[in-house]
Image (cartoon, rainbow, N blue to C red; front, side):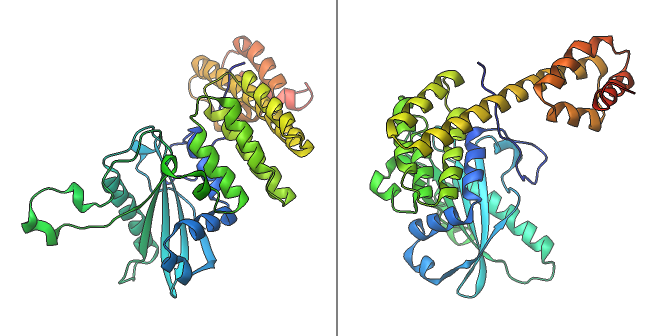
Length: 341
């Protein structure tokens, strides 16, 4: 069974939609305020945590990553009050397998994008809010890129006072021990654990350890939400065939011995399998329709993206009987009216 991406769509300021499974998993997880607050409380400097009013934490929609790097960088931005003033907490998730030597420069560009947006929304401002940049990295190779922007700039000491400078906080998950990765709340621990081990060779161990950690989540709603997230990420990010991965999920869920794990995990896996089949069929039919008619109307394209397998199969069988796009749209209207025009 061929796997298809089963979740998509982001709030990017660019129009490009990114279907990278790491991007989707990161944004789905860190848009949850409870998880983000746990991360900030456990991984920000103590003096910043002490003076931050996390009750004011507010998610900023949109992405400030340049479109050229959208497949390898994902970002989340929160605004919060620190010592009575607004500041931005900017998390960049680096999901390349190797460190980006230009990360400090890229961060500077993204921070400038954020400040530009702030100025556009506050045209009379005479000050800019502080931005705390954080990089979350889960590649296998140890991070060895400069943490300071000034380290990247050559030209000698004479130019030092003219060169902007900042450092970013790095969270290289591969270098953190399991004790540190388990210092947040249970949902955050599951998230960071799976990010760290998603590339490991043994799929059974990866999901089995994740399932063992999910059991620690006491709240029933959070338990189900986190487990669905883990199953989704596991199925989308691993390279093995989806059928084999579902067998692993079933085996490990049974081994844990918690009926909730088995029930929720298998329900989520089956839903994702069906969604993947629909998305795969939808993609094929869309290609056929565009080849047959050229540009599709927005209404017909939306119907092809949202329909079930039965309707897609019927449309695929009928497509070569249509003389033009109007015939295709008329056929769809008749189907929705029970076969009567």
